[in-house]
Amino acid sequence: MNQELRWLAENVQEWALGECGFIGVLWAEPVYGVGETMSCPFSRSEWQQARIDLGLHPTPEEDEEWERLSQKQPRYQDSKGEDWIDECARTFTPEEFRGAMRFTIGKYNRRTGKKDDLVKEIEKIRSYASRWLEYERAR
Image 1: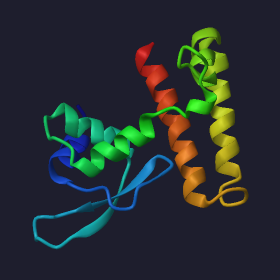
Image 2 (image 1 turned 45 degrees about the vertical axis):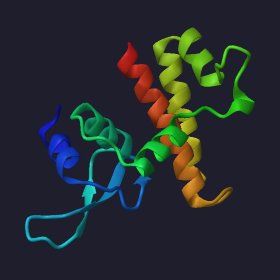
Image 3 (image 1 turned 90 degrees about the vertical axis):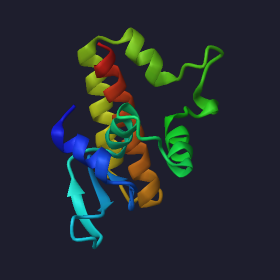
């Protein structure tokens, strides 16, 4: 595990402002005992998974948020529980799948704040990026 990510997982107890693309904002308790906000190159899901991997049990709020973000929307699932992204991951070549994910993430990034609420759009970007990451890790 990356040493910076390990430090964050061990020392940062709460993700204060959520995630914005690939840069998250964390609330940390530094050595001096005064809270400070700092930018982080890791996503919330990476930080949270590192906490789980290190045996740092998530808070009930973290559990609830993790569950909510990891669920697929039922209206997009077929009878097997798969959605369009699952089907693409299974049937597209790696290049086709990566292109589809780049396009979709780019679409949401380009229209942020224009169609839906900004936070909702960022959550969509996060969802697609997370699914893409799952695909790459499974290869």
